[in-house]
Length: 19
Length: 89
Image (tube, rainbow over all chains, first blue to last red; front, side):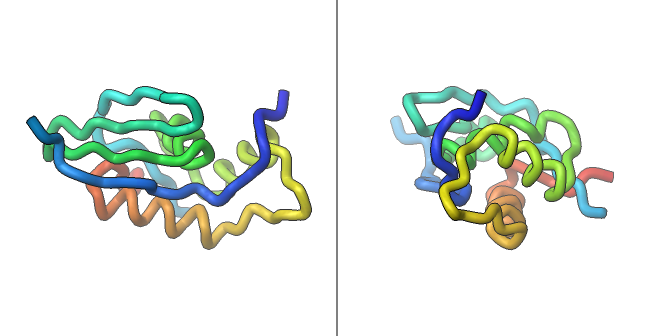
């Protein structure tokens, strides 16, 4: 079954784990 | 043919249409969009870009949009930069 409309793969956020 | 695979068995969780990958080696969190997470989920074993593109075509609705190999390669290379993915031997 098809899931949803295709959008180019993307990294939305990349950050250190904070405390 | 270049193939890509996870560098380690990192903790991953899906929240709605976003994926979060927890890199416990560098203590970084990486958030991916829906298709990015789908690509990530395929890489528990080595996959080529061509296989990834084929899987995307099977699983997503393409409204007059092509799956560009360059987009996938760019995404995978970013994951390599962040230490989440490596070239498979």
